[in-house]
Amino acid sequence: MAGSTHTVTNQPPALVGYDVYTADRALSEAVGRHVAPELLDEVGAELTALGRTCGSAQVQEWGALANENPPRLRTHDRYGHRIDEVDFHPSWHRLLGKGVSAGLTAAWVRPAGHVRRAAAFLLWTQVEAGNGCPLSMTHAAVPALRTDPGLAAEWEPRLTSMIYDHELRPAQQKAGALFGMGMTEKQGGSDVRANTTTATALAESGTYSLTGHKWFCSAPMSDGFLVLAQAPDGLTCFLVPRVLADGSRNVFRIQRLKDKLGNRSNASSEVEFDGTWARRVGAEGRGVRTIIEMVAATRLDCVLGSAGLMRQAVAQAVHHCDHREAFGARLVDKPLMRNVLADLAVESEAATTLALRLAAAYDTGGEQEKALLRIAVPAAKYWVTKRCPPVTVEAAECLGGNGYVEESGMPRLVRESPLNSIWEGAGNVQALDVLRTLQREPAALDAYLREVGQARGADHRLDAAIKALLTDLADLDGIEARARRLTERLALVLQGSLLVRFAPPEVADAFCASRLGSDGGSAFGTLPHTLNLTAVVDRSRPQA
Image (tube, rainbow, N blue to C red; front, side, top):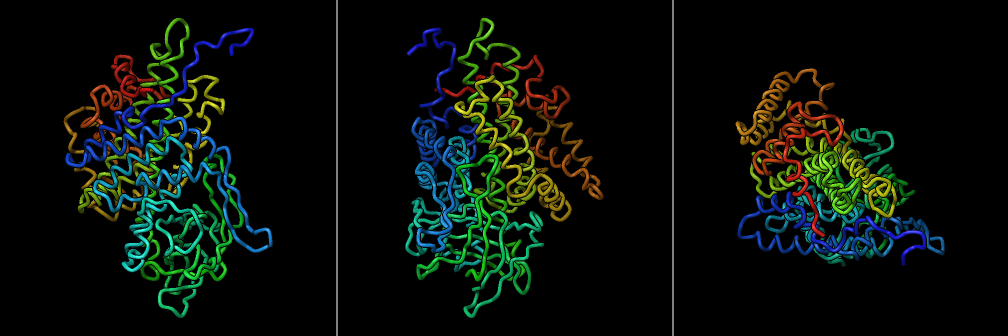
């Protein structure tokens, strides 16, 4: 009903009831590029169905409710028994169930599994990013467990299952299971070799008793966890089941849940081990090497998650400006606003294109693709996740004061946006990992140069950027203080090469001019006015 003093006009409709997948041309084209032709109809139909689910009013409401009703820790039951359980709003379980059934933990056992899963993860992040944590950890645990064939045979069918079962009972009785991870401790943070949690061997071969703590333990409601602890021969990886085979609860004391800036639907915890039963994964003293493949997979998910947040922010901004009028015309038709939207769209497409290329490397396999991942994943994790906060903030500004109001959904994107840069190793950790790879693995740099070299000669600004990068790489001694700058350049050149090869000319031109050349400013909305910005914005428009 209209108010007695005014009629509500010039307000955009909600961006709801649309296919989030097919509306994202950068994503759907990347899937078409990286999936074999014989699988493309199947994968496309699956992602289109998920895209419609993501765009539905019901699922978007679930995302809002899960965020508004964060998890609650129950350390004891009514009788005083220690239970260490986390209660979630029903919407959380609905979302997590949809994510599992959509194959977000099944990449390792499906054809084109990583590309189809990466696209789905990017879509699902746009609904509610919090439930991405257990989905990511479960997916990423598989390569670590494969270092022990016995454990892999026992756990992998449950972790890659498309059945969600959140009941706490022995994993042997479940058709599907979720995993979490605990590495960091109070005194060490990213320096996991400073961990003090100890592991004492038990009588049964391969079993240990753990004593210590984890300062950050992801997804504490999971069925199992991969953790690091000090065994007699050094830092070692262990599998800690939440419930033991006899049905009793393992000692897994949740001290508290973290009160976080964003990601509020997801439980992040501090836990203590006190005689906690665990199985060794890999050899003693090889804990970091064992768990590193899990870390690499979760780092790629950080890239995908940030790409998803950026895409949703851009979609909301373009949609608003399509329907909002000011000073006699639609906002989207105003040259300055068009510049802002185009600049945001270019950043979003660059992130999506890079993320899907890395996912495709997992599917393709081979030594060169593996080598590329070793340098490109930390570089992409460093750069894409750092671009996410300014994109979401600028997109919220496109909505004006409406973008600062919770009901718009934009504040949730803004609060979520810094997480992936911090999670799984903050910026300095990624930059240092890039340096170590450059210094120790010549094959990784060779794979990278082969990849970007496929676009040489197509754009003079890209060629100049590659030449400048090679100059930077000529002297790797004493470059720790330059590690961030070098990592940024590695990511930008890789993004530029992919866009030059695969994106429409107007997108590649805008990227190379502003990110690789000198014709762009520090803020969004400073693209050269001579570019075809209308085409860039049209490409990013969501179709409601």
